[in-house]
Each structure stands twice: as structure tokens, then as C-alpha cells.
Length: 469
Ligand code: HEM
Ligand code: MTE
Image (cartoon, rainbow, N blue to C red):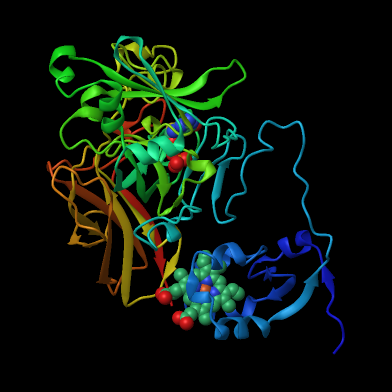
């Protein structure tokens, strides 16, 4: 037949909605899949995530597509080919030019440094978040760490210093695996900004993700360095301080600390992780080694870990002392005194709706609502209540995902509710709220928990949708 027309990636990128038609690429070929969007067995919203770009990064995550009949469907929609010289050049003289490639589905809140969350409708598609979709929260460029020369510096009692190589860490200490949910203190900040402007990245509901982390226990490493559990009683208020290998222009490293008992207490599951979901830790998530502190705010989970020390004082880092703290709604930028509030460690109970999307149109009949729920400090989620009428009447959602040990429920539960759509309703005000093992509940509105930094945003989550055929 006649040769196909040749397009650039930019031209393909202009076709990213049903109105402009939906084009995608696969290999060197271009497809107009507009007519397939409504037929997609995985749903319209998911297939549209790839609109205007390549299918490969999406299909790599959903193996259901590596079947001949899927390719056959695609072939029917071919409209062209990509020009061979389609290569993007990394920019030079940019401290972020060495950052790793990222998945195109991520919703980017800031490119440099890179901060991004997955689309909500992909977040609850799997219990463990695929590494590429796991939310990414960087304050600085991703450091390039050479695994061969890497040493973890552990400062022991009496000035003794250990320098542990990766093979030493992996060989000397037993491997331990824990499923842990990480949540950024700023998750759902956008809802706080809607009440009154706050300072910070506009996170939606997906600055939270779950992985199976593998590594060595921090307590084993600290014990090897000479610290013991009894220190807890003797020394009282001590802190384990972490420093990353990512540095700002002044040479200051990202740092944070956790209380000594969080690291050394009985049943402590704090990891120095080198694996994430069975793969080598990705560069964005702290390669080659990061701290994973179950039940504790993301900010203490220091990535690209360079140094561990035990001190009488918390980490002197800006991010420990002058950020990631909660305040009264009465406090503003003129009156705030960061020394008056404790650093956030364990997080409060949280839940959010991931499907349907805000503003979506849902058909009458039956509706399925999906979401996640989690609480800090190992407190399990015991229940999620869902309302379709703004909180007047409630139904109990079905919890899915791993059931976890009491007091060590480090990972989220996913949930779903299928319910009849009230026959007379033109709109639904869908609400969810979770209850944790201590019967902590989420506050019903944002206003009373508003704070100038927009952290700890855990009010009932509300999604409004339209009902129509
Ligand atoms: C399922 C085709 C893009 C996510 C499927 C299936 C087909 C298909 C045929 C059913 C496979 C089976 O069960 O044998 C396509 C085509 C696409 C496309 C032709 C592009 C032109 C995407 C994208 C995503 C996605 C971009 C993700 C963001 C899914 C999911 C399922 C699925 C999650 C499983 C649905 C379920 O089992 O409930 N797709 N797909 N697809 N697809 Fe796609
Ligand atoms: N560690 C280093 N070294 N540098 C950072 O910028 N960001 C922290 C934490 N650890 C950060 C870090 C914050 S605020 C969060 S929420 C988590 O990493 C995010 O982890 P993730 O990117 O693996 O999701």
C-alpha cells in the first residue's frame, strides 16, 4: 500500500482529547484510537492518560496488554509513522539534567525539583503502587551515587565511626521486608488552599503510595555500632538523625530525625531499604539506600542516605526544625514561631476517594466508589464510611488489601462501595471518612484544621459528580 505519513512527537502530542482526536505512539508507529476510547475494557479515563504520547510506559505497568489480540486491535487504528530522528537532547548546565526519566502518567507539581503524584484513578488500581507511579517528593536534584564507592557513615557511641559498603550492609545484617505506606505531610494540600491560600506544592489526593520495602533493620545496624535498647531509659530524649547525599547550593544536605525509641523500641520496623517492590531502589526513591520509617510522615524517610547519628537534639536540618510542623488556624506568617510546635512524626487518620473523579458524569443505576484509607503509628483502619448525599446517610465500604498486625498496620487498606444511585438524584456529593484502631476519626471540614503550611489535611474527602445517561 501507500507509505504512511510521517509525524513528529510534537504533532502526535496535539491529539490528546476526543475533540482533537486521540493519538498515541507504539514503537515507531502512530495510531488514532479515538473510536476505541469508549470501547476500552480498562475504562475511558485510563486509556486517555496515554493520549498524545507513547503507550509503552503504560503497557509496561499493565501486562494485560502484552497479548496478540491487543496488538491486533491497535493495528487497525494506524495512521502514520514517527520520523526516525525523534530524540530529545538533555539540557546542559542544569543541576537537574542528571535526574532520571519519569513516567508520563505522573501529574507534575514541580519539575525542578521533581514533585509528582500519580493520577488518582491509577492509585487504587493495585495494592502495591508500581515504582514508576509512586509519588515523588524531591527537594533537590537527584544525586548520582556510585554504588561501588558508596559508604554509609554510622556514628557510634564514643566517637566510633563505621563506614559500611553496600555488600557489607547486605551481607552482615538479615534482610527484612515490610509493606509500608508513605504519605507526604502535604497530601491533599490543594483542598486547604481552596479555603485560604497556603504555602507549598498543590498536592491532590495522591501524595501517598505503598510499596513492599526490603533492606536491613536500622536497629540491627545501630546495635552493631554499639547502641542498645536500654539506652531508651537511660538517655531519655534522644534522636536518630539522618542526612541525605542531596545537597543544596550552600552544601547543606537534606536531613531529618526520628525519636530514638521509634528506631530501637521492641517491634521497631524502621528499615534502611535497598529494594522497593522487589526491584533495586529507583534513583528517585533514594538509590542506593533510604530510610523507611513505618507510620511516620514521609519527610523523615530520608533518601540517598549518607549518614546516621544519635544525638541529644533533633536533626538541625531546616526540614526538621522550620518546616513540617502543624499550627493553629490563628497563626499566620507574621506570628509563626517554629520552635513552639513539635515536628510531625506519626500522621493522623486519612482517607480519600480515587474513583469517580471530581466533576465526572456517572450513569444512573449503580455506582462503585473506590479509595484508600490509612493511619499513622501502626494504627490499622477499622472502617470506612461512605455517603452519597453529602454526609446525611452513610454506608460501610468493603475493605480490601492486606490485613495487618495490630499496632503494626503500616500500610493502607483500599476500599470500595457499590451502591444504588438514588433515583431522583441529578448530582451526588460523595463523602468518605475512615476510623482507625484508636477510634480516631477525620474532621468533617477543612476550616478548623487549616494551617499556613497546608499540612495534615485530612478532612472528610468530598467528590461531586453529575448523574446522567
Ligand atoms: C485492559 C486495550 C491503553 C489500562 C485492556 C484490554 C484491552 C486493552 C484489549 C483487555 C485485555 C484482556 O482482558 O484480555 C488497550 C488499547 C490501548 C490501551 C488498545 C491503547 C490504544 C491503556 C492504557 C492504560 C490501560 C493507557 C492505563 C493507563 C488497562 C487496564 C486494563 C486494560 C487497567 C484491565 C482492565 C480490567 O481487567 O479490569 N486494554 N488498552 N489501557 N487496560 Fe488497556
Ligand atoms: N530525602 C532526601 N534525601 N531528600 C528529599 O528531598 N524528601 C522527603 C523524604 N526524604 C526527601 C527525602 C519527603 S518530604 C518525602 S514526602 C519523602 O521523601 C518522599 O519519598 P518518595 O519520593 O520516595 O515518595
